Length: 506
Ligand code: ADP
Image 1 (cartoon, helix red, strand yellow):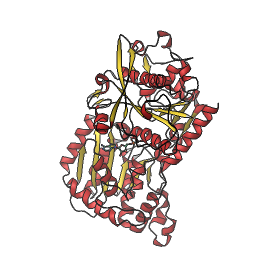
Image 2 (cartoon, helix red, strand yellow):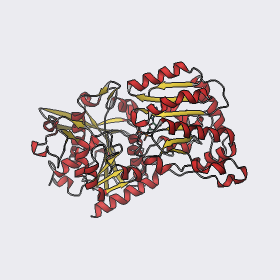
Image 3 (tube, protein in one colour):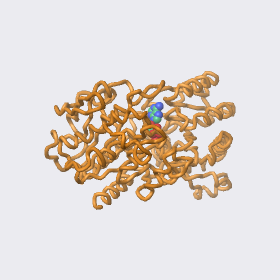
Image 4 (tube, protein in one colour):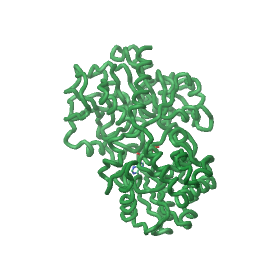
């Protein structure tokens, strides 16, 4: 079975969020298992920097129509592949497994999708070209895929093209598509004029096709046309069928509910392992936690936080309303006055960047704000903080809480989506937590906030802090419980594999 993963980002080549981890790691897991898998991503400026002189031009060029213009794209691959052995691919260039769609005008920019001021205005064209590029690579290199696994709105047109413009094309005779929704909040909405750029006639512009309240919706195209639809946790798969979480697509999704499943993401054990993590000043594991204290001190020192017995709380993530930044900003002053310290690492909307920077100015020594995407600091934060905050408004799966648990930072998170599926709540165990004789009975890996409201967040964080300060043995037990969870990718990869088998056999 030949699998093509099409994704707008994938580690280690490009990343703005969890999707990159999912696509890149899934591909690597497939290769480790000897599966016949390919990965296709755009060639961004940051990808060039990440790949360096390993980048190789295959010499293949694709002329992709985009409305009035034709975009000439190069196809690049890697000079050396580190993705395990497997069946060699006839007709494929030099055994390449990762293909980059290259067009300097469209992808050679500072950012992947836009800046703090907003999305790039030509995102529709950029991802129309990428989506067609993926199909054209399959055709040109005669890959004949059995599965094309598409990720998020940027690739939503791929299943749609296969059912329309590419229908009956022998190159895709066997191809079945999977559309994975990593976040329904991002759908790729564009004005009707984009239909021409996409090469789709006006007869596709109606509510039963790609039209969505007067706009074109790329994700909707993928949802209606894919052979299977998945999202990244079982709870989120149920939530998106409701108007509250469906972002207007709940009706469309309900029609596909028989083909919709939730498969939890995992984390990459080779990148996220406190025993081998090169970013840390000391290693540790659930068997020997002593190195954790050195990480805590290093985090304090490198962020200019003062000495304190109190807990060190941390937030890492996109600064967007989805991540509950408003709630966080509301509760931080009270917690800092009570002795808590914060490290906030994030990048995103200007308004939140400013409000957080203001706050850190008001609480020097108690709060450190780091603006930007900083991988080494993220590692140190997970390893050195006591509590990891994830007060998301909604959360399809979430990787932050998984990494935090692996590193012994206890999540305090909203009871929604993947957070509910991965964090086992200790809140109900008050009488056990404060009784040393019952230590072995302390179950659970974090604290769930039952309502999206500042009072609820504040109350739950206080509860966690109280256990941290007053019931240290129980806290330690929760840390060990969290660190011993298995969130490895092999399980998720197996579930995707089962789905592919079902589709390919159908
Ligand atoms: P998202 O909704 O952004 O995909 P996830 O929790 O699923 O959220 O994944 C976020 C991933 O990106 C995690 O691996 C997290 O550590 C990382 N991350 C987010 N923001 C930053 C940042 N500013 N610096 C470093 N890493 C970050």
